[in-house]
Amino acid sequence: MEKVNVKYLASLRKAMKDHNIDAVVISGTDPHQSELPPMHWRGREWLTGFASVNGTNGTAVVTDKDALCWTDSRYFIQAEQQLKGTGFSMMKEDGPDAVDLIDWLVEHVDEGKTVGIDGMTFSVAYAQRIQQACNDNDIKFNADFPQFDYIYPDRPERPKNKLFVHDEKVVGQDVDSKMDDIMTQVKAELANSILLSSLDDIAWATNLRTANDIAYSPIFVSYLYVDDARRILFIDEEKITDEVKKHLEKYNIEIKPYDEVLNFVANLPKVNRLLIDPEKTARGVYDKIGCTPVFGGAGVARLKSIKNPVMLQNIDIAMDKDGVALVKFFMYIEENAHTGKLTEVGLGNLLRDLRLADPSCVDESFHPIIGWNAHGAIVHYEASEETDFTIEGDGLLLVDSGGQYTFGTTDITRTIAIGNPSDDMKRDFTLVLKGHIALACARFPEGTRGAQLDVLARQFLWADGKAYYHGTGHGVGFFINCHEGPQNIRLNENPARLEPGMVTSNEPGLYIEDKYGIRTENLIAVEKWKTTDFGPFFQFKTLTMFPYDKSLMDLSIMTPQEIEWVNDYHKKVYNRLSPLLNEEEKNWLAEKTSPIITK
Image 1 (cartoon, one colour):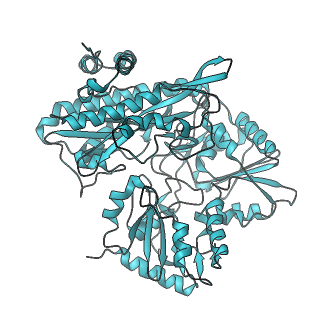
Image 2: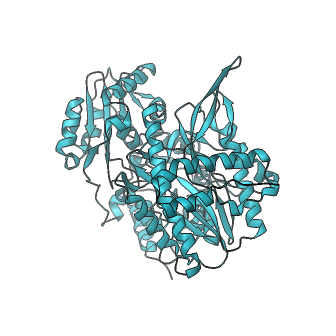
């Protein structure tokens, strides 16, 4: 049976014909290049049926004959399932069978035909790559085809949630100081003004947050312009409270309507040299700029990524609070696993309630991934009423979750055994854990990039003929986005260097389709180790506080140093969390963190 999406596809093809568009590329993001766009901009999900509350990565292409949706290896299984009957087919953007979207376009669109995009939902950089390929192959390019204006009559409105001030005692830096840092970066890049489009950059720069503009991220829809004389926040005025208005007035930040940003940049004085980040700024904004645009701005993301000492102290508070919620959660699982009443959806609801019981937890940092056995092999699985598994029998339960605390953002994955795990499960779990430990123990010289460390986490799996295809580590924000750049730890080269104060995840995994999935994740912070004749060296500090499942460890393939590392970590977990627990919880944690004794 075909899904209703087939009707949407027919409507799109009619709109394409009406506007002389032969192929349309449809992004999965918004004018701010958000990983988690508000529902107003999730048109690609509405069109294709490939959807996720965590902001599924996907880009669609539609011609008169083809309807395709590209996504990465995290979503292959999910996409295959959700695209059935929609008229769309899945395309792989990574892995052995990957097909490059732009290469596909130039092979399947004839000379003289037109490729169209909505320039407001494509970055300058991505749009330029498509346009250049079109130009090289005598294909026309149209960056002004807002397809959902024509075919999406019930499109949700832009979010209008109220803002609030993030306590600067928790942040450790006021807005004036941040603006000074931003302008220093602007001038270093030979510009005299900047337009910030990325919502996490704006939330960081203004020390403002909101709830529910974007799922799981306390950031808000806006633009921010800064030069030596003016600071202007483009935002829907319904979002401004009296408290926020006073905060903005204190730091001399003007308020203008959100929709005025295009007219504003179009009328900037010609002498302006406006710094924009081509990876974060919409092509539709760029096309309106009336002064000289300067490409750059990555330095602002770097400023945001380096957490100051006050932030790092407060992240420890967030980790302790998160650890307490997780103790209660995993205790409940252990006590009730035999009943046959636990389900993936029910556990997700329980975990959310336990986190939000702490008043400093504003939201989860993403929709929890709770996968029992085969569902654990779906990297970004989201349990629903249609897919919900009951936890029964023997196997592995993967729980990837996090919280948005005013003290910091958390993200943790633990895989636990229920019943009697197989020897293969134990071996695979231990290979993943060994890689996790190896990365946590890394020491490296100043200037090291994440791609240079990534193999540390993969080496033991590779040596066993196994692999995973997602990144090992993503940057993490401070009560902003759970995924933050510019730093990461993955196979792909990234010029961003790892610097003290940067926080990333450490999350190797292994996924055996239709059987089980394993992932072990902590957050880690880069810190100084020592300086030698060869210069400064750095190391990682593990931030997350919760034990690993000792019952899954195959001690026969662990070194004495790895076992010692686990024991030391577990001792720290107990010392940090036990003062916050009742006696029953404390006893449970004492058993889970008791030393591993080897012969």
